[in-house]
Amino acid sequence: MFPPIPNPTVASDAATPRFGEKDILRRSASEVTPPAQRLTEVAKLIDVSKCIGCKACQAACLEWNNLTEEIGFNHGVYTNPMDLTPDSFTLMRFTEWVNPETENLEWLIRKDGCMHCEDPGCLKACPAPGAIVQYSNGIVDFQHDNCIGCGYCIKGCPFNIPRISKVDHTAYKCTLCSDRVAVGQGPACQKACPTQAIVFGTKDEMKDWAELRITDLKSRGFANAGLYDPPGVGGTHVMYVLHHADTPSIYAGLPDNPRISPLVDAWKGMTKYVGLAVMGFAAAAGFLHYVVAGPNKVSEEDEENAERLADGTPPPVPPASLQEGRTP
Amino acid sequence: MSADNLKTHTPDDVEPGDAVRPGHPVQVSRYTVAARINHWITALSLIALALSGMALFTPSLFFLTGLFGGGQWTRALHPWIGVVLFFSFAGLFLRFWKANLPAREDGTWLARISDVLRGREERLPEIGKYNAGQKFVFWGMSGLIIVLIASGIAMWDQYFYAFTTIEQKRVAVLVHAVAAVCIICVWIIHVYAAIWVKGTIGAMTRGKVTGGWAWRHHRKWLRELVGTRPGKRPPTPAE
Image (cartoon, rainbow over all chains, first blue to last red; front, side, top):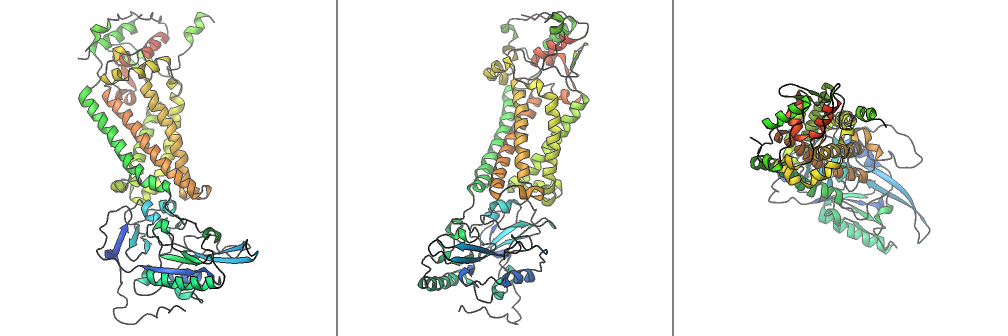
């Protein structure tokens, strides 16, 4: 078994946060100087093969974050609620999958929630300065005071995680219990997991632990067992051990190769710079034209011609050569 | 067809309220009060949309949200201003579409765009109520507003979240941003032309232009107006 994180100490400095503002690696819609020294990267490892689907993590998440999920309906499946909500930061997704090789029905249970990407799409898409921050230990956190509720993070996220609250119109997702981690505790879901399917530690420790688990699974016939730490988003700080790591999508649509959508890249990259340049060019061109060509003025002659036309006496049409430079 | 029928037929580019008022100088009514109010509601909406939209488009302009009461207010108001613009512009569209239909002289006007830019209008054909540039602004605005309202609704998560997939929303935000850049450029052309061509702004404020202005820039339209004046014999064409 993985050694559990010990209970909190009662030392006088125990409540002093171990990371904060000074450890911000990225801040939405802002330029920040990354901290000179990076904190040890943390990670949560979810071993899907050890999960028994008890939903203790879901309950612990609600409890720690002081959330109350609306009482829903039984849709005939174990997944409840049917999707992540502004109140449910984590969700057990149940999939009944027939293994085509063995014809066995396999019950795949995946704890869904924010993956805390190393390259977070939500943060890239966010237009509000400081509404999303990434700490140097890898935790991606939403700062609700700065959130404007636009939902751009939803478009940026490759995992379909953030949800906008209808109550306060800000975005919610798993915080990786940043408040608990800051005082040396593991996330609430990890603490509640009865089978240690969820473990928490440094990212390196978690990779080593995953390696042991994968070796064990392989020895028991799961040839494709592996770690889900997708490189398309620079790796994640929530990782899965999957018994079928070759096909992540069978686990309730876990993306096979997640990456920030090229549409989002184009929108937040090229479009922004080219767009501002084009608008600036249009305004500058107008200014230059005015300076070079001068105003386009109506002459006395134009007025006279109009008067003659209105009186019914057709104005003469002088040859074009005489009309040159008629503007006073 | 009798000659009478031909005479009473109103050309496409003569709109209700357009009229010549003889005097010194001649005054030409170009826009009715209703059209001007309609125009300025649209104009104010477009400016408010550009400011709030740019605030959400690029972090360097996020401070513009302060004009709307902060980020949350900007996010909430922007789509509603868009709805106002859409219906307001629809009013302008119904008023002006006929006068903006393509005409034969538009091609010549465009071919001589360098003379247009140099202000050498004597080298241009006689133009109806709108020249090809104004028609470009009109149809450009019309098309882009359709694109913007459609993509805008797809990304208006507060009410329409459930109607589109996330991939569709991603397409929508990109299309919305590109269309917004285009419409701001069209708007810059529109405003610049009104500033450059002296005597134009009065058309949208007091509704009138001088006869000389109409003679210089929209002579075909002026001739049509003179020709349709009650009790006036249409003058023979100058050529």
